Image (cartoon, rainbow, N blue to C red; front, side):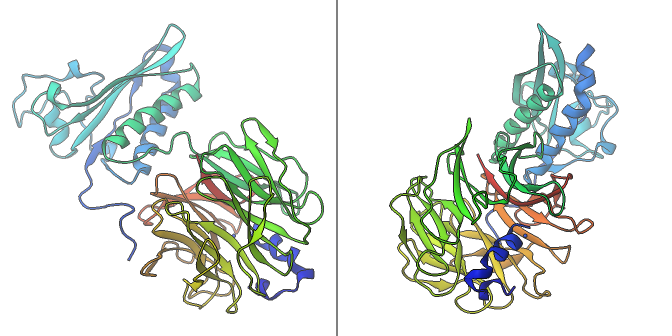
Length: 451
């Protein structure tokens, strides 16, 4: 892009366009355990919520990237609902159509683990009784890994909640972290040319709702480490300025914007005690650090070129990646939090932007036009120490703004891969599964994943 060569007079166009964009150790593939998750049944009125329940349970476990899902077409005909449904007198090799653990452990299912259970409505509560069995064990008593009650409201939301919670317990047994309860903030535009507002949704795309109501251009959301605040850029007062809102309840916490034509791209430090951002104060544009209310601001970089998108390492709190045009087209740079030891991370070809730290502080995800036409971004990951990179998306529209999930396994990103319309997707951080689309209405940009 030529954005980084624009004059201060044309800088607003830069932000408008921006709002409209050997990997190892994150997921250990190895020999993934095979898990069978047959559809659970509900008693009485609970059954009408089971389609949503079963889809949620399957999607959560499958999306964890930790387990290999056994296709339902290979399951035995009889599905247990509780441990007592198993015939404990069966002998190895004896086929009881699903009533023996060996029916599930042997071909064609060949599962290592089995999740099963049932639901009912009791005393005005949706109740799930869920089990996870290790099929390598000899008896149902020895096989039980999980046996637990889950409670929810008597509606589809309550059924989905219990499914999320059961899935979270299954995922935890294999060393994973559930995304249940996390949120993705993003920029929503009802139609091309309409105002852009900050919205939020659950990690799986559910419960989408509007946060800001400026009827203006609000972009570049960032979430505090504890999930209690968001910071973003808005043109609500004419020129781009920074706003900080509390999340619950939603209210303006009044960030002080120093006098400048542009204050933008805010990002919280890992302790939540400072915000880094880009400002044209004293030149266009430098990285500044300030208190969460905007006071005590001070410049960190002093380049005559545009520096923007600062992100502080979540593990060290002492080093920063950012985007700069100091060497020509925008690239990813690394520096100490005091502005020292600046070095370029991306190799200088194409255009690179939107860095996002992995929770372990060793990897970043970013968007890059390497090997493609100008402006045609794809998602990459890079080991910061070695600078080795892996390409995750491949020539399927424009892919930008990657954001790591708190579990360090998933990424959210924006893509034009379907009909050229920008929507929010998630994928595994090693690119091993097809992306999952989260948004469908209007145009949606710049996801950021938080607690």
